[in-house]
Amino acid sequence: MPRIIKLTFLSNQYQIENLDSKNESFFVSFACDQWYYHPRLLESEKINIFDCQEMSKSKIKIVGKNAKFYIGFLPIGVYVFAPASVVENRIVTDPQVYQLCKNVIFTNTEYDNFENANLFLKSNYFPDLFKDQCFELNTSLHHISLVLLSGEKNGLFAFRSNILYLNFSKPFDNTKLNRIILKVIGTREFKFEERNTFYPYYQAIQIE
Picture (tube, rainbow, N blue to C red):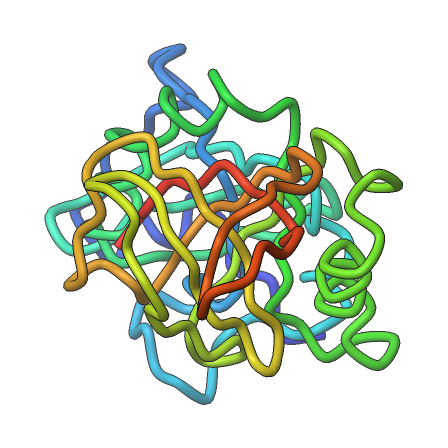
């Protein structure tokens, strides 16, 4: 566990707006690969896999900010930091995500042999067992590629070696495949290469 930085120390070192003291704190969805233990935001200071596990299905409380970063507070009593652009994008996309999802499992962690990522892969084979569950994926762990569009908002996509049928909330944007939310719907029959096949079926939201 890295040294815990106190909010009072941060206020002395940086121009921090303390949202908690003004009763203006708020929550955003949490993806651990976007958060750091220090406002320097160095790759070597990204939060560790154990704290990712603690937050894998949770939102994070935002308690402070300045022009470059936001400050989040983990339930285990640790302040963490994310670039301002990350949190501001979550502020925009979260209402859409949580209109679709009750909670979101973040898959890009290494703890317990990629447990959350394996849950997503299991949902490809047994979608009925995971119905209504949402997952957040990004291309650093799951390679995502277009196979065939059948309309502006739907089509077949390859995730690793599996082909899924996705229905997007907005017209598909090929420039926004870095991070995506998938909600398990079930299966969908679709004709591809002259034969009808049932594919795992997900509702999709593109985040970035």
